[in-house]
Image 1 (cartoon, rainbow, N blue to C red):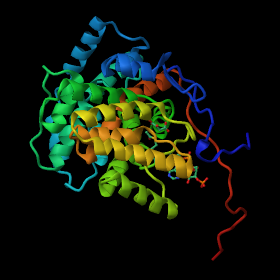
Image 2: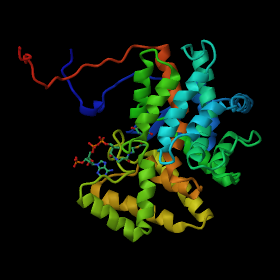
Image 3: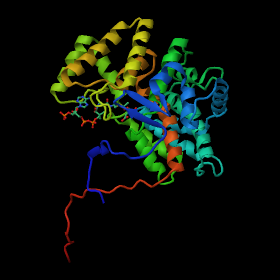
Image 4: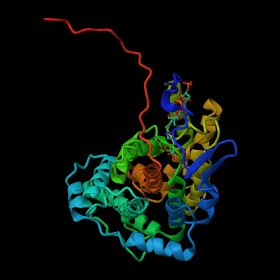
Length: 374
Ligand SMILES: CC(=O)SCCNC(=O)CCNC(=O)[C@H](O)C(C)(C)COP(=O)(O)OP(=O)(O)OC[C@H]1O[C@@H](n2cnc3c(N)ncnc32)[C@H](O)[C@@H]1OP(=O)(O)O
Ligand SMILES: O=C([O-])CC(=O)C(=O)O
């Protein structure tokens, strides 16, 4: 048995994969052979979803068929939505999402839930693509006692997702920015949530269980939960000067600043953050909110100066979502909705080339104790 122990499994190779790889040295996020940043600038989220599931980019006609397959799965079990409506309004939307995804599993018919074949897992991934955004938007509306907005099939997948959240059909520019954010959130090699999903899938458990585990992982502020924390910090500060002061106070108290640092990029920029920074600049101009962009840039400079830390995706995705009129409580759930396809691809791969995850420990507890007799 290897005695090498890496706390947090830092730099440990946990799996072989053909899905994605962070080539930090060359500042490239490789996604099935493509550069994620190039994909985000040139194709749509559904193209990337197809690429993740099938291993190849679709033609325009194939992408249309894929979109139709998703829309054909828009029908949502009313029992699940009624159940979500019973949850207390204080519930975290990630908990609502966890409950909703878990409950959806019970509505798979026949042997479908237990079928681990690639074809069956792909069908379930497509159903999840259709239904997870409805749990995000509808679940939030359910607990906040707002009317639930049903999907509009005449809208694109991405425009409909935003429409179900805000109640307004997005402008082409809003749709494009939101779509780009979904692409950059879609897949990222082996983050904690994907690892959790693969560990669960490795017992031959089903895709819903694996995704439910990923939701629980992604909720934490050291992972997906950071995007909500970022927006709260930006709103609390309210101006560039106040943000600088707030960050310095937090750093003096040895607190972490959400949206900065990354286990893999470490002291290098997260390319996705830079793309969202561009999107924020464009959106801020369009919405006549240049101060928000300026404030974020100042925050970035402060962290570079004080800690040599760069922003991660969550730092710039948060203000983008804010300007799109999305409530903060939905930021992390949207991350999960976008990541559903990446996690699904990993579950499919895990089931196809499975070996049970079962590591060992470095035991540091006592030994040779005995219960007292009598
Ligand atoms: C899309 C995503 O999920 S990206 C991640 C989103 N999460 C966040 O933004 C949360 C804030 N960031 C962090 O907490 C960390 O950078 C993590 C969890 C993402 C990565 O952490 P790790 O790889 O475990 O690094 P670790 O926690 O060992 O930090 C290394 C050093 O950098 C410091 N550091 C790292 N991130 C931050 C931060 N955001 N603010 C302040 N200091 C930080 C640590 O305090 C530590 O300093 P020290 O060596 O003086 O003690
Ligand atoms: O890779 C990670 O550890 C976290 C992250 O950025 C992501 O999941 O997008």
